[in-house]
Amino acid sequence: MITEIEDYFDKGCGRCDRFATPDCSTRQWDSGLRALRRICLEAGLTETVKWGHPCYMYGGRNVAIIGAFRGDFRLNFFNPALMKDPDGVLEKQGPNSQHAGMIQFRDNADVDRMVPVLRAYLAEAAGYAEAGVLPPKKSRAIELPEELVDALDADPELAEAFHALTPGRQKSYVLNLNSAKQTATRISRIAKFRDKIIAGKGATER
Image (cartoon, rainbow, N blue to C red; front, side):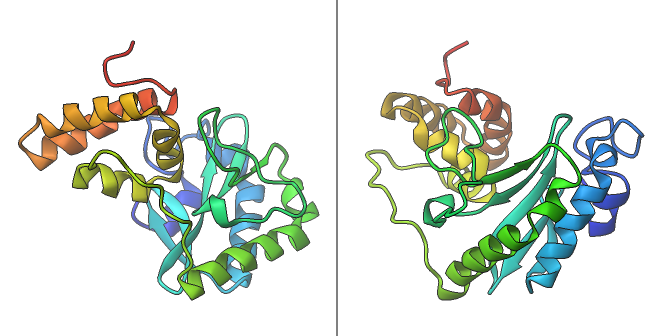
């Protein structure tokens, strides 16, 4: 994965073999991604690279992250449960997401058409970050391994999908991870489980 912000806008995220090729998703959405970047910076957010993507912070907290896919590009807000969405533009990342926290673009020109809305939503999210406001935590019947907690904190889509799982499916992952003695093994398993969790399946389901 990339570690330098300019590499994302010039080459891609570095997470697949399409990196630095004309087929990279960032090439298709180049102007839209750069417009999003400009709006985030104009909002006074701090730009950094996290998980191979441009991440924007305020007050030391994550506010939003940009991503590009073959069919669209996105601005995802952290802590989507806090967002009010008066313009009705937020969407859920997947069928198992509990809260809508994504603005999806299918045309590069859509970003410029949404500038006032994007500025307002970024200001709202930055306000929560500055005040240290977080969504209320749901009580958990099971104790999550530290590595899983870290992975959920770092990946909004994964967190939404995991917390949408039934308690039994959540427990299946906890039991599997706790059976590994090494931290590296747990981290590796979490990466392999990601697609299953997003799909709403338990650890033993096909």
